[in-house]
Image (cartoon, rainbow, N blue to C red):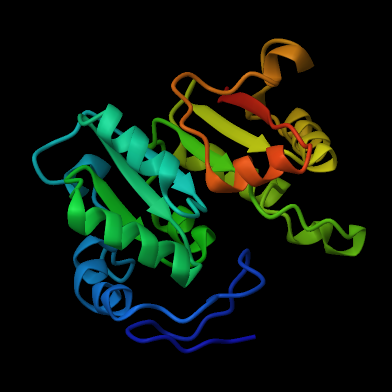
Length: 235
């Protein structure tokens, strides 16, 4: 289905399904979507920079991408932890983006840029071999088998990842859904440009270094599920 959005030509979303917006935004959140987001949002109508680091003020040494940052807990944690790394955060769900903007109004991050639409559009816009890492944490698992084709991990999107990642750069994937973990292991094993994750399933049960946790993860833990934390390398 085609959608017309302010400032964007109509184009169907390839890899974002489900609700675009949840509960009513507060006046502060709605205002920040109109004022702060345009200053931080990457404009895909402009040509991509030859050097992606030029998107960030003050200069950075590397650039990482997080797709579907939810409430932004991990993204804000990492951007504070690595001030010399530029971070691009993608979140098309309006309420998640609004929450991030409220946090950034209080604690600005000069090394953080945002994108509020389908991540495939951004991936297709980025120059080749420009990213030092991609994070995809707790994506929608689409539990019903007839909906598995909607999962973000696919051969087509892995090829997109491989195009924009530098050689040896990590693709990190976390999920609490066993079928999606197996799906991702299988897809990456069949893709010629990604190496298998090191370690055993016991190793994969350990969170990443300095992992801050997320609200979704905490909910999964309360419901008795545990996460798997996989790291694939661009070969």
